Length: 326
Image (cartoon, rainbow, N blue to C red; front, side, top):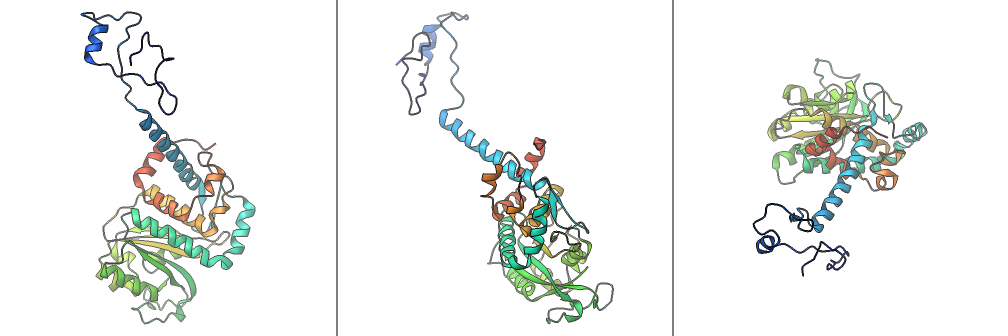
């Protein structure tokens, strides 16, 4: 059908009730404008829509998803990550009374904390340059360290490490279970002990600050040095996690890559804040960013944060928005 005088009242409607404009053929265009470069009052030039309705709907859905993702990302980045003695995660999103309760409930919820960190790490490995990850918690003084794995009792400064803390592996995950080197490293890690200041894990624990380095002499701890070399690990990322109110880390989450990987500051910043929030619990956020809201925030899980941490391009685009938090 054709429409006269651009009258949309008689135009056929699509399934959404929106008028459908007929496509104009070259012959129809010549009929409307015979040898004339000027258009009369009822002879407007035809400009086919560049966006069809399904495309517009898809675009709207994508925009809504991106807006919600931006809200999740902003909620995490607006938190203040404690470290180097400041302890815990505080800031705009978490109420002060929640911090006290978080500290009191850590021991009782350790198995839940482990599940959250493991879910985050697995998702992070699935989208990042890193291939294997593990988490470490303090168990005792290093004088009690005895597991038969490597020369773990000997400190990097030549001391016996008797006054230092000992960290034991909480869990280990990998992006694949078919790599013999990675499997061997995970097996060694599950039985290993790491003392304070030894390797990336020990340095993150003793300093309270994250380590992201490809300096093998610095990141390989004594007990796993051979396994790291056999696996050809090139880069380590270790992030200390604080219990609210504590001045020393309660845990260290680490990831390792088979490739050299330079530190990406905003990724490191996001990972620090995300894992420390996971340690205390996502429900501790009482004021999420307006782009996600409280209801949608309830559906956010550790895997969502793990994937977001690994998505460098998405984070870079979010940083470019530079929106103030309202």
